[in-house]
Length: 203
Image (cartoon, rainbow, N blue to C red; front, side):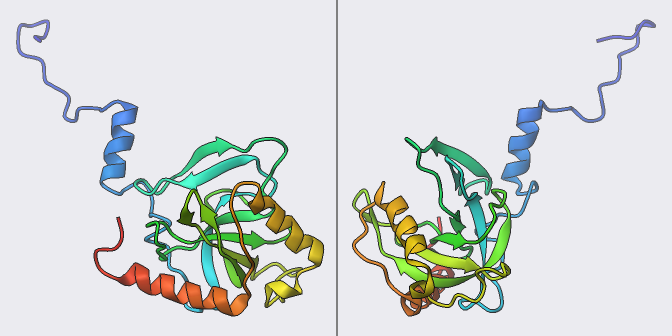
């Protein structure tokens, strides 16, 4: 390329990449955002009180989930029929399960919250589950900063209809043999925190 005077034109100092290329390049350099699974602290009071990341808001029919490579929240599917998530649903950072994912958590609280935010929670129970032949246990928790639920210490303290609502939701898509109490949830959480810290376990 030449100028009107016949001299070579100068190339731009920096080549501007297309938008999609810039996004992907930034994700590879880990410059877009902290990874919610690996970079968010579980909290100094864990396992008694812990941080959790919400993927799905209370009342939603959209099943979001963590994209483990990018750390972003992606749409997985839309739930069938009239089923909605009865409470906010997400995962606990810096934990690791047998399926190489963080442990799932259902957080009981008054209001829905936005996917991608994090909050403080307290485990009150554990629901052992099997999903397509694999263990897929769920921690049941209450929001530690919700005045209506923060004083609940054990799943046995929930109103019977609230527990039935939770059980019924999971029975729609997962085999669930029983419900376990707070002590089991705390013990499992301690084990999953230790498992996360083991070298060469995280993918």
